[in-house]
Length: 467
Image: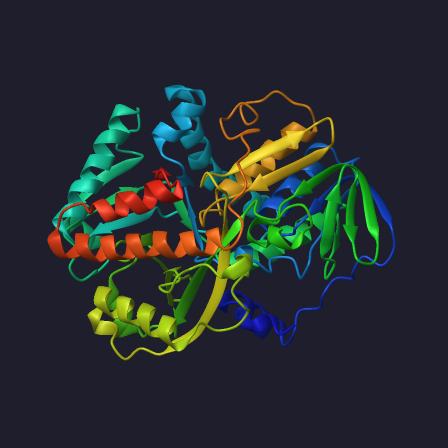
């Protein structure tokens, strides 16, 4: 596998290594463990690391279909943002107003927890806790962000958590064309996502964990994770496969992959950096269309979001490895230049494709059935850098039988129904995406909320974001 094509982060790692990064051995014969974890992305790695830190006597084995950090964990935009799918009303419906507040505080704390893991394990991944700017470029967006800050106050979150910034305050932080204001949150950090994943994998191994790569699990049963060549027997089996769950027998339709794409620019010149005025390196979010950007520690800009085409393939097939299509590349390049016109002509260093996982209720969950020993964590809907750390600590406590603040969070043992079978899934995704895309364009032109977006969201089951 040419891992340098997986993302800009992988490309950088292999360039620094001087060639392909060696792959770990595959599972060649049966093995036994206390805990078997299927998937070596952030969720699986944090779960393993937290278990080994708390109970070093445990034998923890991870089975990865490709290489550790292959999926979204090695292809993301690098924003460790305190955001979680599911609105405050959604999480309050699971356990009341205080449960929603606890959930939000937990994901805010996770941003700091990620930094503490990075520091304690000596992971070099450019972590910087600099906050996030959600930039308003229309009056409608400005009203929404102001209302969001007002809602924060009603839930007990103060100016140290979020504030609405004026146009002048925004431009003092970053020179975004057309910005009229922004919602700022302190609860966000930036990282090199690939180096974080690989650093977590190395930390797991230092503590005695075993990672088998190129060992795709084909079936999960109580007490067993089964590959085509061998089986790992364990008291607990954790599925942490996110958007790649469809390939495991019995796990079909539990999580569907939504396609995403990213690009990274060449290194900016000193003149461009001066005009950019992005000295704080905050993460940047924009709408119409949805975009997420980072000004990296090596002076590049990354930009990406959902695939501008219908972001779902028949049969829940993930995006192929490799660069984004020319259409997608041109789309995100055009959006970059709209935000920063003075960068017109800048070259693109890398583009790449990926997927994130979505459950039927569009919300993440961490579940353990102690009767069978089967567990699952994930469903972050593209917001996994902070929640995956939460999930690892929640799963740790569930496996160790602890009653803690983490296990009492409303996402614990929530579960979700399965998605519809094909062709309903494919047809439905197309209709929903078309409604949201048309509504988004109409909303942007008219400057008022579009019922098409509401219809698309309700049809999909999407309730909004926490944070």
